[in-house]
Structures are given as structure tokens and as C-alpha cells.
Image (cartoon, rainbow, N blue to C red; front, side, top):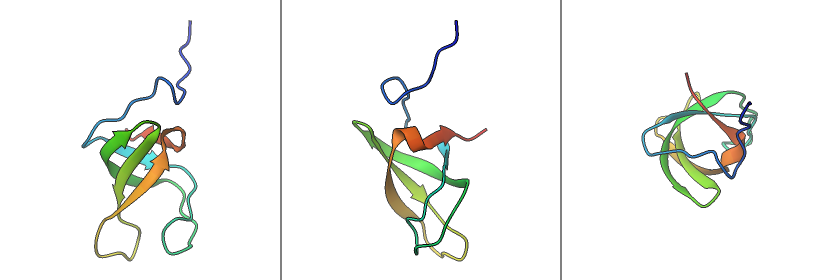
Length: 72
């Protein structure tokens, strides 16, 4: 039997590498497959440090956990 990952059973922990789906949250540019590091998780929201191309520093963004997958 296959287990389907949903917001109810998907958990992320600090330090895990994740891939963000389609987002235009940074500088109103479209990013696909942006990777980041989990800072912490609260309820269904995950705070992720990301650095987009051309950025000098990481930014902490808040995403719903359904829009994230673990990086391999």
C-alpha cells in the first residue's frame, strides 16, 4: 500500500534541504526548483532560508509545506 504525502503527515526539520516548487516570492521573478534550508516549521507553515541567483544573502521565506519537497 502506498502512502501519499499530504500536509497532515509531511514533516520538515531544521537543517533539511528542500526544493521549493514554482514561486515568484523573491523580487517578483519566477523561480522553479529553488533550493533552501529549513529554519523551522510551525503548524503547516515552513520557514526556509533561500538564496536566489544574484542575491548576496539568504532570505527567510514562509511557505506552505505542500509546496516543498525534500532535496535528494
